[in-house]
Length: 472
Image (cartoon, rainbow, N blue to C red):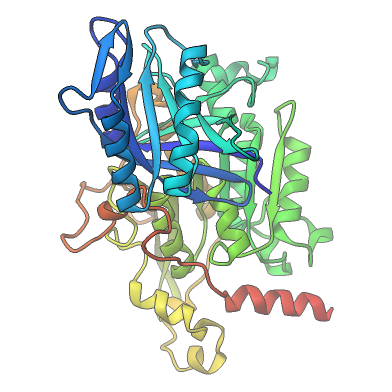
């Protein structure tokens, strides 16, 4: 059920638009752009990707701004030719989240029906304030010739950092409780208010994901989506911080939900447990409702899907993994690595976080086939899933710190790069930056949604787990 609207803009595109619209002479200006839908389980997000700047004579600036019909017609033609929706942007000369004047309402209302009829998508209106705060609405059809604005709860600017401008009327800022004082002292009340209102998704509720969830709850985060199809097994109890003996056999998402309700510090906490794989439709759509995602998965196919979401749907992903090494069945060392991927950053595939060939192997169901696994060498990475609580605890803390840098820029840092902890000799390295490979197509997929391909499918591991539960 659709109950929320939003807009997401790649950082470089937002910079171009802001430079054009916010004028030194404090007059208003305008522009058009194109958008592609990102349809989640409950939120429709407009992915703004291509500006259509005015040509000479297309608009007049006279305190306010107006445009010639030919500019609107050209923008409509470009939207139709590319199969995209139409965005109308203009600026106001004062700060903060902007409402609409009667002239603004009338201008967008007159365009809304034509844009919907020609493109099949609602007109999106955006306003940028003098302090670069964005506000947005979608003009939705209400029957007959009636179109009304549905306000977007937030506008996200997604580059190396993540910024969100919220509509306080739809997502009120949290009350500053005394127990937040030490946390808020690090990044300030305004940043905390924005941080707490992000929809944060955690994909994978194993040892790492469970500790991340607990940390987010204690930090005062209000809106959490938990995605995992698995259940608590007895062998999980030595490292699953959210679970105890009584939770064996329960869904990990339900156990984590109960734990957040016990330890969460926000006045109101909106938790959405999703008992599916992120590869499956319900899990995938739940992920698209999020503003940022934690990747706490140990299989290549889920990482491949999250890598796609980070760029195509403008949802940054904080990812981490652990690799334990053995020599003749004796522990020989362990490394864990954490990175954040998305616009302006190297993707997971190019960082070597997963192998595309392994994605195909998993999609074919071979990781659930005992005969296939038995034929692999004992030291094959498909058979290596060892982990212990201290390793997971350190990785979880590093992932949360990457999230803090991405969203708060505390101390002026928004990107720690790729970090790798080496148990031998006990050091944390920051790996040298490297770009994506020349044949990587991630830059071409930015803000394209699922236009070019769709990664939703069956997950044999999730289906096997649900079958076992149904037989109990």
